[in-house]
Image (cartoon, rainbow, N blue to C red; front, side, top):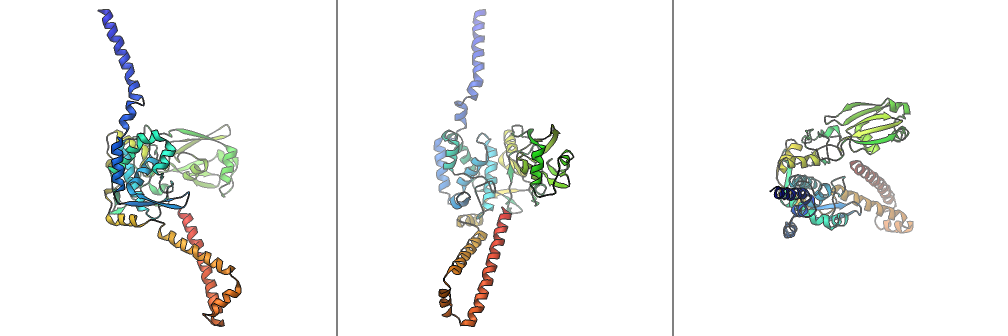
Length: 404
């Protein structure tokens, strides 16, 4: 009897020890996450036949790519989120991405200046077949199951649906990070970021490197002794450094984050052994939806609508209007201001070509239209107009760079 019981116990131990291996292996666990190939093909067909398109500028080439809206959304979600994330978090990202893209029709690019985007082919090339086979169906599903759904505020498309990787526990008011106040980008708690990366990260910078970097910002020069006395003078609602005094200069936390490549402006520092040691928590600017926070909420049972309404204060959700769809379908190139700039560039090129034309040819052409006195007046007007056009062109280019 004892031998029999010992045998049963041994078998039980083997089985119990084997369960974690089965659950964590790439076999059953991976297959459970995959959307069936037949469903993927059906979703792709549904998207291609939807008749709603959007155009995105490929910054690397300057070309414009027009593709089905929901394919664009799936590609953005795949570029911005982890495939392992919960479906409700992916859906929240899909609605945010769709809203953001439609709000920037004509000015939409494929970099983080707008929101990251890579085509299905580019994703496959970058991530590999196994990753695509495992997760592409999830990204498509997030887009299809929220198809056409966007975020509104005061009956207008919410055009600033910002998001970031992780907040460190609380998001930011927009005006404390960026130079504008957006009513639905308010600071809220983000309590479910236990799985977030970039927690309590440290970065060490020598004081010599620190001084050189600060003095490269074209501000009042600082000395090494100023670093020893630097002080955080204010923090934002979300806990990030708002201002820091270094010598006779006041810097924003964002400036220090960018200058030293910190994960977040939510940092503290210590000075040890002739080095500045930064400790940061969170990743990104901290405004809008925390992606890790959204995933944490999804794990707790919140759906995508609840997630969005938590991170974007006072919003509503609904289907995209016919007017917005028509604008997106009919815009297959740059926005009006870009068209104006292109036209002015062409005009400038023609002007340059004119100045290189033989003088005798120019005089001959003008003789057929004006007498000598009129010609002089027209030439002066044309010169003045050319100068004005070039000045306008410089102004537009300057404005565009400022916006970027």
